[in-house]
Amino acid sequence: MAELKIAGVEAKSLKVPLARAIGSANSTKSELDYLVVFLHTEDGPTGCGFVMGLGGETSTTLVPYIEKELAPLAVGQDALAPEALWTRLWGPNKPRMRGGLGVQALSAVDTACWDALAKAAGLPLARVLGGFRNTVPVYGSGGWLTFTDAEMVDECMGFMEKGIGAYKLKLGTNRDEERIRNLRDEAGESVVLFADANQKYNPREALEVAAMLAEYDVRWFEEPVPADSVDDLADVAGRSPVPIAAGENAYMRWGFREICERRAAAYLQPDVGRCGGVTEFRKAAHLAEAYNLSLCAHLLQEVSVSLLAATPSGCMVEYVEMLPPETLTRDFPVSNGCMGVPDVPGHGVEFTHEAIRRYGA
Image (cartoon, rainbow, N blue to C red):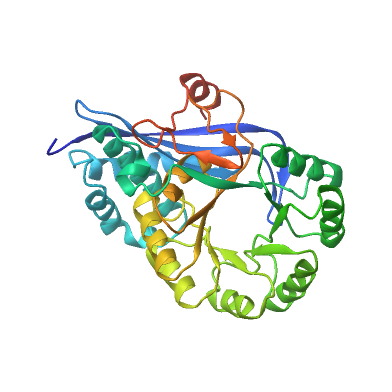
């Protein structure tokens, strides 16, 4: 197949309720906000891309932007050339795509294009991108500040029952040390703990927290300071007794290049829905490999598993349990602490017609 023309780009907003409210140092949310993009091709497959946020109106804001501004640029272009499409969409929109919502819109369309390409090739996306492995270890993510100590322990133990040996909890209260101590006492020393501050501290505060985390053998300290200040992140990384994880709020290759050059993190965490899609995730992965860093994707586990499986730098998938049953057409199960790459063409993520009908905004 020499060319696969794009016939149309469709965007939808989904508001998916959570079983219970979840809170971090940033805010407390009660629903998931999905922007879902369908990239239709002429006489070929439809690709799916999506962005997920915790609450808010990102999806409803971006639907008209995609359909009125990005879709006309995409129609008639070749879905087998996602790099060319990415550049065509980015070029005239640079002022709006230096970060934030503009890049999220681009990310969703780009991911849909890569999905269509892999479907047209009849190959799993991980194979198209390099095919380094077929399974990727996961870590359980949660420990929300809205949880009681008992609820957090139950969540951690539930992950461990699936064979998952690592668990991440949130920081941001005056009881952080007490929560971690209780978790260690109940879950034991064998579980690997990570901690996420969601950009809460200044460098001095972050180093004080890092010293406390080291006492409980916490293995990474995520986003200790505001993501926009790589100087502060590098300062903390150079002095913290706990390795730093960052990157979920970095945009495109240039944001990750700065983190890598400054040695501001030991674990790089691109979010395929924020960083510029599969195209830019790949470039972040190459940087991680070049700088000998571990690549641990942020959220969107169903797509992230294919991206991490395609590179030697891929380390762990962030695994969360938030989607209601039967939202997707297939499950992405964890076995012995690992998630497998779907053995289907594309990335394998498809929302059911019922979910689109039920949760459509």
